[in-house]
Amino acid sequence: MKPSTKDQVTGKAHEMKGKVEEKVGQVTSKPGLAAEGQAVMLAGKVQKKSGRLGGGVEK
Image (cartoon, rainbow, N blue to C red; front, side):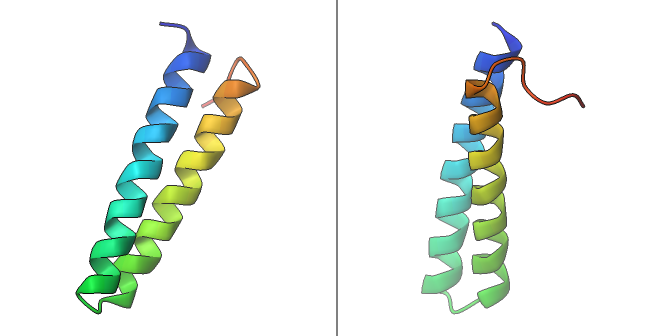
């Protein structure tokens, strides 16, 4: 699998995980968990975008 495709898949996984964490934090009234979920979701979006641009980001 190409690195750019791998970044897209990993980014989507992080984005979905972040959405779940955010909703769990909201339902359980834990703002820290909700904020962490938002951060993970944002990181996933960034990683997915970098994969779309090709090549990805140097690590």
